[in-house]
Amino acid sequence: MLVVPGSEDPLAELDAREVSTVARAASAGVLVASLCTGAFTLAAAGLLDGRQATTHWRYADELVRRYPRIHVKARDLYCGEDKVWTSAGVTAGVDLLLQLVRLDWGTSAAETVAKAMVTPVFRPGTQAQYADTNTPTSSAPSVENLHFEVRADLQRPWSVKDLSAICAMSPRTFHRWFSATVGTTPVRWLNDLRVQEAQRLLEQTGLSVGAIARDVGFASDDLLRKHFTARLGITPTSHASTFRQPRP
Image (cartoon, rainbow, N blue to C red; front, side):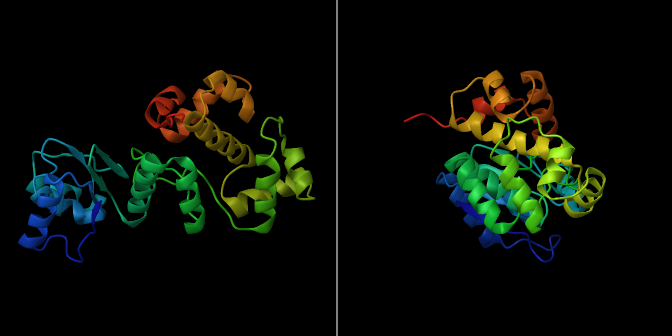
């Protein structure tokens, strides 16, 4: 894999040797990815002609002006296919690289890396560059304890009262504290956990969407589809088709 970073001055003339190196690598079958304005180097090497690509939103118009044959997705965090990928700003580059880990090694590997980096495991590439993350995180001890308690029994129909009891708070105090600490509501956080587990089961098991919905605590497969698609931008069935690991 060859990862091309952005430059300090993305509008300056590109180094011909770097462009040539990228072109040769792609010709040899190496996966090439760009971070931020590194997309300009890939474009100069001819790798993005006729493809969808993205870059930092500040420079998207310039990419269109210089390389009109590229289908620039100015709002996307990252995009690509086969062995050519591009991403937007710095954190979007992390999202892209986590996605590439997912494609090669599966969700568990990506979760391990993401946890060490204290970053959300998965943000879909089509998510807008300046949108909030779908999966809120917090290192507060009470949140960590709550996470483990709920994750261990996702099938349970958790209420705010149940969640607040774990933290020894009244429901009203808990709701206020949770929103201030985690940055979202307890119900949305709970549904995010269920979607994450559904994501793992879709990739690592042969269970049906209906069975997975029950396993993660959604009352129906329709509810799973609704929340899964809203958060990840893809249906459970499509996700399984794309990411399900072959059984040994």
